[in-house]
Length: 71
Image (cartoon, one colour):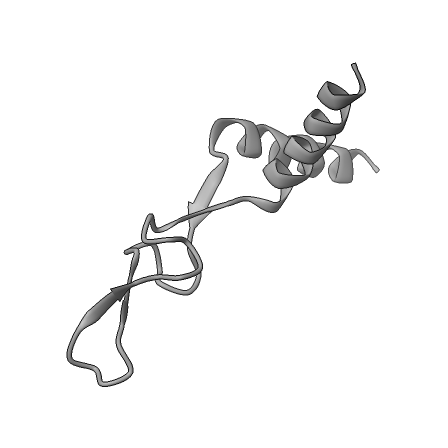
């Protein structure tokens, strides 16, 4: 029980400090090879930034938006 609580709090802290992670499709580069293999294109999943929002941070943002809209 205590270990699960520590892991959850640790993940919540990580989402607060580092809200983004590397994009799994482009490995954080923001570029993908074109189908021909000759040219690079921007990654469509991360829009060329190389970063994706963590799942825990996305959930926190959703709750914050609901709370803000309820006021």
